Length: 415
Image (tube, rainbow, N blue to C red; front, side):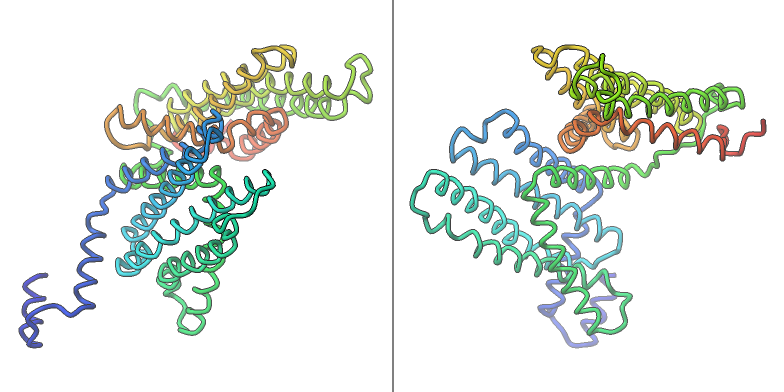
């Protein structure tokens, strides 16, 4: 390629690349250095940085003083910047956008995230000043101005990316208009997501998972091995799973109905709070059957890798049930509830374990990061609503197995 470029330069009488060619060379050089391994490491660091604000808020460290609050915002938006860098690098390697567009977007993303961090800091300072009844400082009053600037620069950063992704649009006017609209709305959405660290954690975890899958080159469903022939979902096993999931669906719906309405037709239960606690307790125990049935149905497709997540979910449901067995004033009730959320996040992390690259210690680190991200973002909410969600999954599992029974080799079972 270099020989071809030199011959072209000699034919044109050029002794050095033009300014556009030089920037194109720099852009492609940076893109070539963004290997899948580098992307995974950047995404991992980004996820860890995005977890810091959540840990600080849970531990109360963020309310110690203004310096701790400033540190939280700084780490939060540095993580957002690294997430955008990793996501952009993946788009470049996938051929979705060109290296030149990615370089322009990166150059604009740095001041955009900086202005976003200043916007959040200004809002925090202004809120504290208003709460204390003090005179508003110039920084506390600049939230609106900083927000508009961050929005504008963020839209400018997304514009070359959107323009490159809309290459199939033939009309240049329509392409520019659509790119501008996507950039403006996308910048606002990303800014709001970054300000709420839960959405940022989910985004960082998603980028890490996708980058890890690309690096390892695996898919969740793997081909069966010879030593796993005992995992065949025979007609007898299928009937047992169907009966179990159907029973779990019936009893689960009953538990959910009791939790919502039990106090009105079962006077012995007491008030609605007690009925809710009893319904969630029973529903969590019934959900264990649903988890077991789902794991048994997935074994022929995915192998023994489903056992880890299934055991973590069972442990989470047992912890949830234990927290509701105890009195709500018990000192162990809340720790057990937290343990249930953490175990739910661990189940999510173990689900992606076979797709993660690197040495064992690095994979353990990735699993821990994904598990914490899942627990903080949705683990606690999902496990609390398990008594209401599990019946729907049980019904879905029953219908799928009845309509399309699956054997280990992926063919329909003949009973």
